[in-house]
Image (cartoon, rainbow, N blue to C red; front, side, top):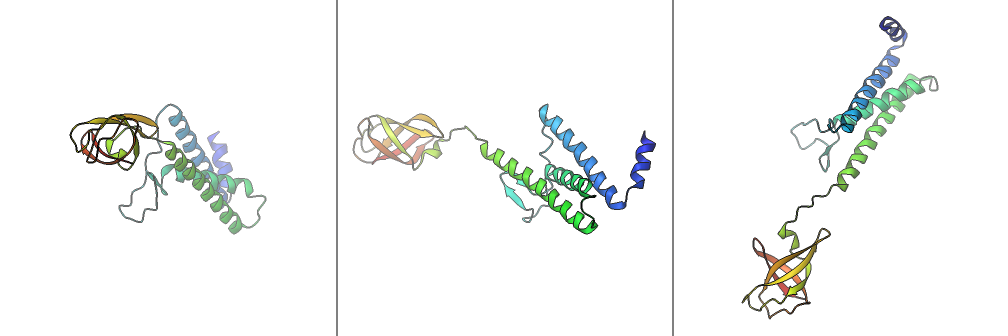
Length: 193
């Protein structure tokens, strides 16, 4: 079996050997990555780091030179070279088309991962996220910082009830307020709108 494969491979031209090698190697690693991802092991987090500002970072933790992008380039390059060899007579045109298809495959996977990362949401609430937002006065807030009241503020789709003070006059329950700053770890300074 191996002898038959070696004989077949050696009978191919040099460019066809390159296309087949990229197609088989890329597809094998792609399938391995897919199986590892399905069982919960993410093998795509490895990225090439050049320790420079010119790494073509796409933001959101995605680098143009990721292993997954390289594997998808090899798959697109190899299989397009193999499948279009009979349709395209010129080796130069075939090479250019195969490179473009490979780049397209890499681009598609990078864009898919960028969109997936946009869906990620960190649900951790930080009180500093309230600054500048409007809130409802839940419990009356005494004026001139003479006591504490409470406000209800919506941050990230959830409502939080937080202690509040004001520098102005007393703010009655039900009033709309704007959060000016965080005074202590869990105390907001507000003003009536």
